[in-house]
Image (cartoon, rainbow, N blue to C red; front, side):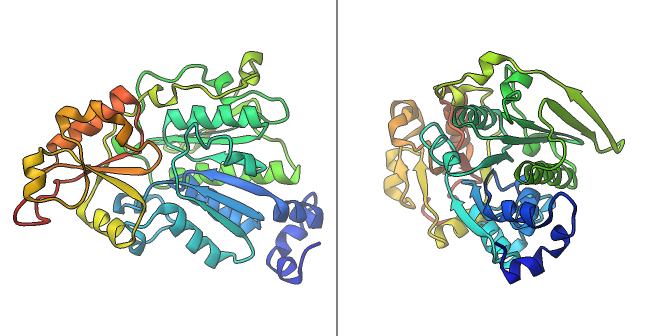
Length: 357
């Protein structure tokens, strides 16, 4: 039963044939997990929250960077350096206090990929890398959860729905990952594109929840933003992809991201001031560390592969040296050879943090 506040806020939904009170009650009872609060996740979250989705989970381990603001319009300049999941929840709560927001400030991995999505009715994937997409897909197949997919690349976007009522999965459309993974930080992206694709994802989620319309199951919607043209590709299911029983062990090795993500001194300072949970790794030599350090775990570059067990795979990890060169090399080794996807290189190292460094 809808409350008076809900009736007033969602009045235009209640007027719609096929939605009405029953459809709105379904929305207000639904639990949706949004993986990624970046370019795609922002519009998904905004429209699901505005629509009155009862519980929205926000899963993201990243922080807001100034370069995000060109397309991630949920955030403002004041949010730079803040964890995305928390910043998104705060802004969305102000927009619609009738929705329950759950913050998952963590990286999705094999350890939690069944536990966290298992708490929700459906999952919307707003991630920007192939390891996460395959992991989310396999988890949803195992859990029997519908998955709303979206992706963007330069001026093009894609939307589909997987694992819906026995329909095809992500692996049915993309059996094998590409040889190399690129994202918008390496290739660029038109700022409005994730807004369009994310809104279409939200639309699919609402259709699934309310039981209205034709869901994009077995269909891939393609957008060319430069030509303002849409096209549709149909695809079928491969039964072996629908019978996944357990998660694989090689997600971190799928199309290892070539990107080396940088974090500025300003953003790093805000992480420290905000007492954000992260690991700091110093890859300088012991003599340099003894002379001056900022409290990180000392793992010299030459010994980095001997101490993989000391480097977290689930928390954000900031790696630094004196000027940024050795730490970039460490990030490259850990990503390309050992499948890490949660690393950040401190731009310029700790030069400037203290006169002795």
